Length: 153
Image (tube, rainbow, N blue to C red; front, side, top):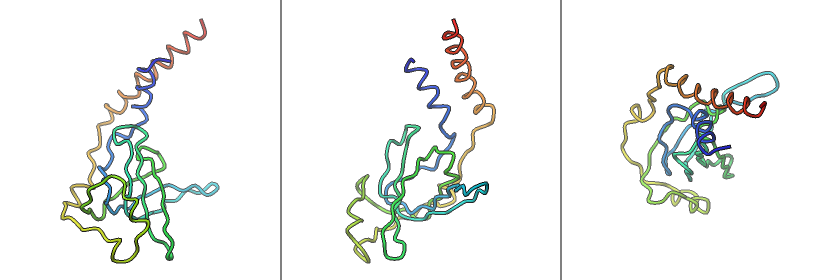
């Protein structure tokens, strides 16, 4: 398999628009949870302590919150179909990408200095037109058909 084929498949799996999340942001992640035949949305709110591979289809954020006095961390793939939406609640001034020092702190020492930001402007996503979404999927389907024909011969 060529690198171009892999790149086309990866680009087809990406969401068209994702909120630009930084370390230090307090976010609300709406995640789909399947329980048997039922499906519901669960909200996980906490501080983003890490962002990984922002430009990739495997971009990931790690969110930390304190639940009943215990620190809980969850990692979310930004382009996953299980992540419904990410909403930025608060933005803070930080000078590093990985805020691992917050794990050892509690109370006032765990606070981050807040920044003023346009909450509505940051959380609104510009959806790509349906024609662009279809155009992104069509080349992948053609390449998959070509490889299937080549294997059959």
